[in-house]
Length: 304
Image 1 (cartoon, rainbow, N blue to C red):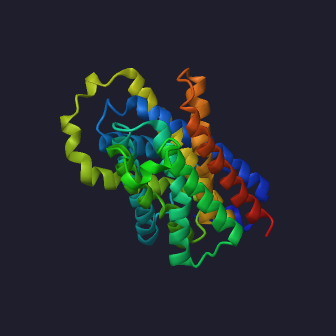
Image 2: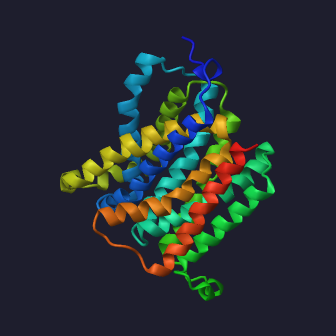
């Protein structure tokens, strides 16, 4: 069965692709809050394994019906490289949320565009304009501002908590995700690639964390944790993986990952809607700087 992407036959406007990425950003932002609520109930690696496996089982039948599974050894290996970055990131994320806040992780994640931009320059020669480099620098400044609550004198002391450092390591792995999609995509349907990324991610997790499955008291896992896992599997795994991978060929790795600059502001809105209140006022300027940096990055891209 021909499983080449329809991307070659039908091209969408950049406005439509940007809309998809806004939807993806909203969904990803909810994962920080949901993850923080359930991470104490399951080991981070086990939680990620269940999330990936459940997502693959839900998505697989639809992909098989619509496209066929399109398996080849080369394609399988390429998807395994991509999923390896995601597995490292999500394990770090859920572990980090035991020690730090959802807002902190969302803000640290805003480092990923800069990290991804460095990888993209190194591996695929993607060069950014001066305005884009300035926007990335402003984004980094905004991240530092929020982490240190506006007291930049703490920067010299590097008073990050344990969770922040764990998550930062995960972000360096996540930065490889979009450049690898750009490098390893050979025209396959993004739905098929998403499915095999989920399958290979599940295999990576089974290899490294499968032994922990027997140590979990599954009957003691509360219902709200299972609902959280299902939500993460469908909305912040299947849908966001597909949207991100679909957008990379249109926008490029740096522009796609720049949407992570929306996460801090969106997490603030989500927390406010959930009745958690606002963070200290000195955090707000950093969030606004990060948001402006994202807008500048997207504007300079569209004006080229």
